[in-house]
Image (cartoon, rainbow, N blue to C red; front, side, top):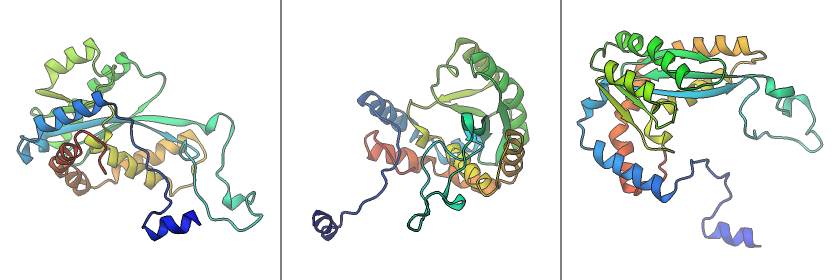
Length: 239
């Protein structure tokens, strides 16, 4: 069989890893960014405030979930992924972290636009930087989302942040807070969450339990992340 021949030559069937699509322009921008910031000393990253937004669902992820089943057991409750009409609700959050630990976690309700994003920065950025002991020398590290690049947000950041670092598009691997948000998702999935209010409670309680050394290790990986982007010529990395 073809399958046996492929296995003989060490090919194995695996679920394809999900990675952002990278065009030539994306890869070029990522490479330029990595080459620019790889020159920074390791301590440069200690005063960086990494920020990101993410969505959490009441009934698990938007993707498919693998389960082990016996024959004719596909409809048993223990092998099903529960769902309700309209998905059971979800919660968007804005979070931040530094090498010291996590900062504020802000719940986003309604449609996120440049005005809401500006309010989030005003409410949380300085407070988080002070909490972490990196104010007033903190650097804001965010992606190139149009809301983040809106004139009112750029103008505010100009007067309230010593430096703003904008990552290239399609580059979650260059923002270590992505790993923290994934870690948070894994932690809340240990609970049976059946409402949006319960989801918010668990998100906040588990966020507060994230240890500073976890953040420190992730921030320390920045030079390695940049090096891998350079090695991959702007292509996907394993981060």
